[in-house]
Amino acid sequence: MASSFELSLFEQELIEVKALPEAARWTLERDDTVPLGLRALMHPAKHPSDRYMAQLHWGGLFNPASLKFLNLETRADNDPTAWPQCYGFRPANLDACVSWTQEGHRLHPEWAQSGRAAFRQPERPVRFALLQLQHELDTTYVGRGRA
Image (cartoon, rainbow, N blue to C red; front, side):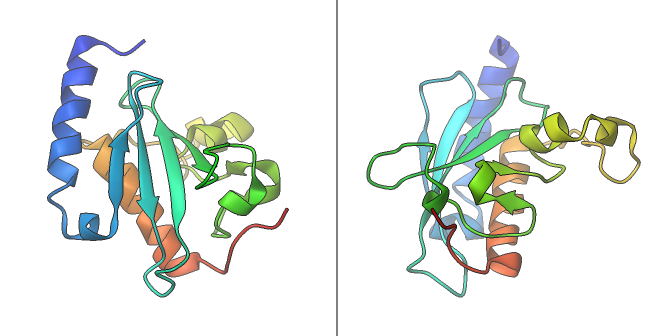
């Protein structure tokens, strides 16, 4: 459960990330199904017509976020074609095996003890997650997931 402090920081960060230059390419919306959640409509820089709806949920604001991609029409979270193919993203498994996601750490508990893969609590977790995700879309994107 998120503390009132975390909720306050989260709401403040949502305001601040909208001022980032990268945010001109995003449509952000609060996900009210969880205390610390948002949805971000994003696209790779070189493929602006390839749009993806990322869903980010935090159990605790300073923990890795859970990352899912939603079908743009139905908002279902179980559609491999809603996922981009990027480094560490596994559309067929509906998860992202990367060190900045909750799913990555669930799959690799040994990362907690790793100097390289351990999650370092960012000062601005929302900004961190959105910029990491945009970086993957811009630099490692190779297409849409397959059914």
